[in-house]
Amino acid sequence: MLNPYMPYPVSIDEIITETEDRNLKTFKFVFLNPGDEDKFSYRAGQFAELSVTGKGEIPIGIASSPTEKGFVKFTVNKVGLVSSYLHSMKVGDIMGIRGPLGNSYPWNTLEGKNVVIIGGGFAFTTLRSSIIFMLDPANRKKFKDINVIYGARTPGMLLYRDELAAWEKRDDINMHITVDAANDPDWKYNVGFVPAITEKKAPSADADTYAIICGPPVMIKFTQPVLDKLGYGHDQIIMSLENRMKCGIGMCGRCNIGKEFVCKDGPVFTLAQLNATPREY
Amino acid sequence: MKVIKIDKKDWTGGIKKIQDSYRLFGPVKGEKFHDFKELGKGELPDLNFSNTRLSPKSIVYPQSEIMFEYSLDEKDSDHHIMKDAAKNYSPRAVLGIRPCDASAFLLVKRNFDTPEYRDPYWIRAYEATTFIGAACNNPCSTCFCTTAGSGPFNEEGLDILLSDAGDCWYAKAITEKGEKLLNAAGWSKAAAGGSLKKIESLKKEAEARISSSILTDQLKNKKTTELYEAPFWEDVSFACINCGTCTYLCPTCWCFDIQDENSGCSGVRMKNWDSCMFPLFTNHGTGHNPRGTKLHRVRQRFMHKLKYYVDKYDNGIQCVGCGRCIRSCPVNIDIRRVCDMMNSYDPKACACPVK
Image (tube, rainbow over all chains, first blue to last red; front, top):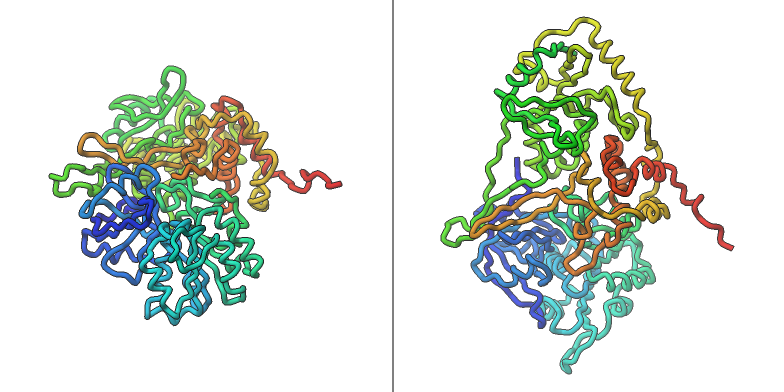
């Protein structure tokens, strides 16, 4: 019997400090046992339990794309016991990864559609995975227009800044980067909250357009009315949730919203699905 | 269906023989209450009880269970890598489990044995166990098993059902596992022709003694969001102190936590029982808590047992009617009353007219 609680052993290959407050770091892991990378076959939007031996596990969205081979990447905010300890670890240290877990974004539905990605703050990790996946030469033709609205408090709080700049230069993706406020006179992108930029830049709704929203609760709260105004149906608004988790496989009982487990039945739900369930997230 | 007659004089000898090939668990009286424990060689279960204070779930699902071991010493070649802890899944038997508690394992199995994932600890322990039930001739006033999908002589989840016929036990072998245990005990005397009839009449008498009941027929038809918003949760949760006694005693509560515990340069990763009654159960790292008030937590317990489970598995409620949570609740919260409120809830009847 496969043991779903057993993590794959990995070592830390690279650590990148992403933001100016140094609270977000991206960890690149390589699998210690040959063959484990193939077993860890994932889709954009899934997550994994990062297992820091002696401290515990944390559920974190996978920031690398299935099209990137040889490693997996996670961007971790420093918050509690496990993530704080992880932030003190060094390249070469050994730990574990358990997964992939959860359902992923609905790639079968999204094929042949316009995709609008709306992200805020550090909830951009699985969205990065999705963008890299869609922009892969083998995949790009499967999607129509791709629009990305991504905001952070300041320019220094944006994740993956080099990649954002590279995507800005491409003509097969429309980037709308924004910050709440900029003190940098050279800032050449948008200034304003994500809901306001969404109202200005997001394409209006049609049957072939889907929005993926990922961000802090306050951003979601004010962006949803904007999408309603633009005419997006609640089946076309896709959201990724977070809840406290332990097992990640729908057994330990804490992350449920109604009868759905965020870990196993989610973390990705349509707004229509969420409307039918208690909002315990 | 094979029925064996066990003369009471053969009881002790048979139990000793069972212990030659099984780890045996049974009810034992402590200072005030009966509880299940592993019996020492020659120790007898005490079947002179109504039911144990704690459910027997820990026989399959220990309150604290080590999954993995690890070394934190970088001098060890496999430091920081999880290794399976040693486990004992040799045959075990639980003698004297009540039918309600045995059927509870079947409800819990739906959580731990799923098409996508299988919990190897729960499943292997469950598969190693032979369940020898003791039918209830004298149910308590808080028992409502007959309307909760079980009953005092219910056979689901049991391998053998023992019925006390006064001067002897009738042992009905329900599964092959059960027959194997009867053979191991040396209990092989076939009961006389009328035994099934006798068991049936004992069953009828016991069922007639169950004085309380619940209605669950409307739960499935209710809208989750409407039940969730019902005003009665304020009243139901008012006295609750979130002590967690109900979930601790419950044979069908399965929630757990995972923790690492270190000692020097080594440690273990464990599964521990947890409870939806505790705020930390759902508290986010940011401090945000989606079930931040006791109303949220009390509602979660009842909605899980009586609505979410019903909708998820389409196989009844997540309760077998043992009544432990009613007997031990320090503030007298009664699942029978809450179930009736949920089953009969009509949001339209509660709405005040708008002037």
